[in-house]
Structures are given as C-alpha cells and as structure tokens.
Image (cartoon, rainbow, N blue to C red; front, side):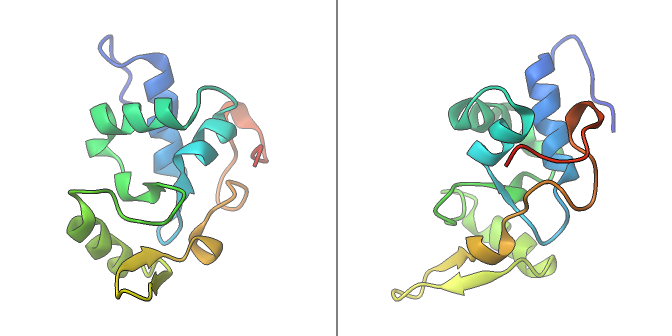
Amino acid sequence: MCRMSEELPAYAERVLDAAERIPPGRVMTYGDVAEWLDEGGPRQVGRVMALYGGAVPWWRVVRSDGRPLPGSELRALEHYRTESTPLRETATGEQRLDMRRARWDGRDGGSGPGGRDEAHI
C-alpha cells in the first residue's frame, strides 16, 4: 500500500510499511521494527506509530513486555482475539500478549525492506 506524500517523512513510511507486513496473529516490538529496518530505535518507531499508525494494524507493533497500549487496551485485545494472537493471563488476571509465541521474526510471509529475504532480528 502506498501512502507516500510530502507530509509523511520517509522513515515514517518505512515504519508503517513494516507494520503492514506483520501477519495477523503475530507482533513485533518497537525495537524489533527498528532493528528490522536497520535504523532508528524503539522510541522513534513508537513516535511514528503514535503520529501516523492509525491507518495500519497498529496493534501488531507492541511494547516488549506484552502489555497492550495504555488507553487502547480494549481495542487491541479485540484485535488480538479476532486474529487469534497468543495471549496469556498474569497472576493478577491481566491479559498480555504471549511474546514467546506471538513475536514475529520478520522472515516468514514476506521479504524485508529493500527486497531482503531475511530480517536482522
């Protein structure tokens, strides 16, 4: 999907493209996306997702602890259940992503940015 416009920085375009490549039922952390792109860091990816991520599957780019984004927990959990994303329940009854099972390494289901066949993670 092409969203390229003068208002959207090139780095943001790459982050959003990465988010779109994550298969349903799988997730990548902010740090995973930065590493996959081989540029930026978790905070930069988080900033892009906060500013521009509404048009992509934002719920698939997550915090490394597996907790849904504050303020978007219910919407994110609805998406995770619809996509059969692996979840786990904490001792306090809180729903979190099962990061061990849900995390995507970027290799199956598409090539990386620039036509690479494997991710950096």
